[in-house]
Length: 117
Image (spheres, rainbow, N blue to C red):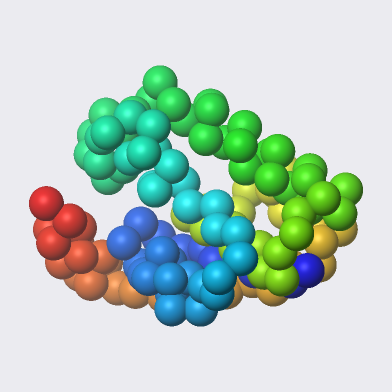
């Protein structure tokens, strides 16, 4: 199984990038999609569903654990993250992930954010 971690600022194209490469049977952890599904709220709003954050991060932890245990039946595991704090990097290290950093100017991100409405 290949683990791909796609990271970068909000609205930098992380989800779009993964959608372009996602194949049937791949697993994608996307914080934004999960928050919207669980709360019905947009993730880029000021009060972006703080009541489900812990649940969504717990799910990420569980997915990583299953991958470490060899219990995920997939060719590709995509983890989408805005930041890469050291604890997350350490958790992912045994999976030898490929890191893809998305780059976008602040202006590009703001234009994309405006388009989310």
